[in-house]
Length: 382
Image (cartoon, rainbow, N blue to C red):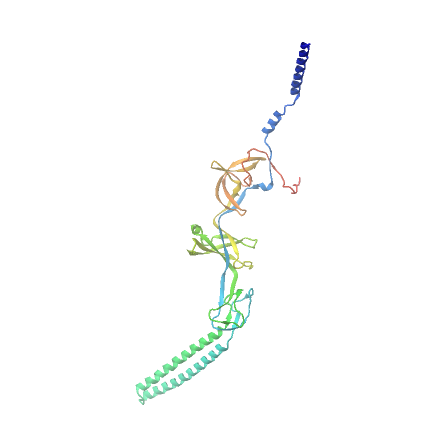
């Protein structure tokens, strides 16, 4: 009985083992396809914005500067004589022409001084006329021997004094007339009134500031250049100026360089002239400038992010025959090519080559490339 039970148990174990072995033989081998898939290169997808075509550009090495704008021609109109202001004919923002009347002052006191000086001149002329007749008569008497030489010399002296008094009175009249004319204040230049500091009825003294007039036809940017960089700045250098609030970049040039450093800093002021034909620029506007220290025309350029370095060698990723290629390059100067930071390519690329414009990390050369449209973009026509 015991032997029969052992026989059936052994048989059951053998049948179970045979079933397990059969199942193992029928299970498909999936490891091989996975291994083959790993060996096949994957397709790398790029957006059109990830790529660019290499072409020739003008490359500039730039020095960044900042500062504020000011008018090349600007004046403070001041009172020349003391008196009471009668009329102020302009306000802030009004355009004025050179020679236009801006302020009128009370003229009564100065008109009286002119009349007084004119009367003094008339009196001096009368005295001169008398002295002239006396001298001439005494000369005739001297020639006939009727008077002494001393008497004639005295008449001659009186004539000289009378002539000097006439000149003095004439000069006093000129001074009084000029003071009277100075009560009418005119614009020294054409421009716009930027500030008005006086009102009718106020009393002013000489050199009191009345108005400010600025000519916006020519503006200049006053920018501080570090002393260590001033050797790269010279007269006539081209400057690209971006003014806060204006969409368009303006072109200027260096017209003056201060011969001394600024007190309390180690910087030197450079003055960059900017044309302002439309009057869009205003005094005090903040501006950022890019001074061109060196320029190359017609050179191949790529964005700075497109150039990679490996063990001291530089390269870019290019698209050739639909695959990704690693192209060693020789670079030159770096700067701005009009589209941002760029590097000159001396060797390794030709005009028209298509490259990866940004640094996307280490890529695998030989990988097939596919260019896809961004989500929502219209599909290209077939």
